[in-house]
Length: 139
Image 1 (cartoon, rainbow, N blue to C red):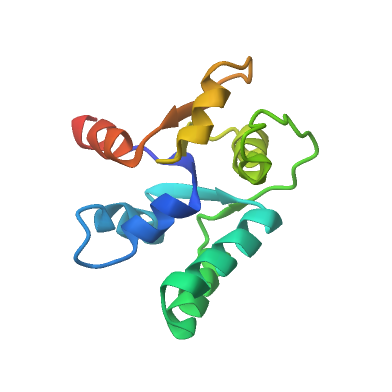
Image 2: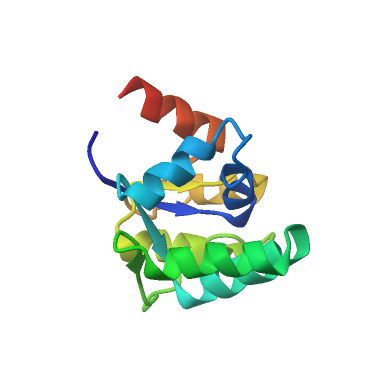
């Protein structure tokens, strides 16, 4: 399996974490370094905020600590802002990170990301979590 770079929207991060999730193997592949998770400071802050609303503080801390310490995590600074999503501008942090990190996929179940498909942002493929999972299974 080749190593690939992805950006995960928070809705997908929440779905891959539970051990009982059908998508947990994606989290395991991130931990093992088979998938390189690309993040920015803004994304880490968003992950922290959202995780703390949905899981215990201990779990949220452990997930963020893992992301920060994993040798396969790619940290980027967004020098360029695309402003691709006007309907929910907060989502632009994920697009900007995907571009800066040269991520192969931006994985999100949020319909706001459909706006990115209509832009000229080079080489960012927006896929839903189930699509990404199927792509990985077929490769």
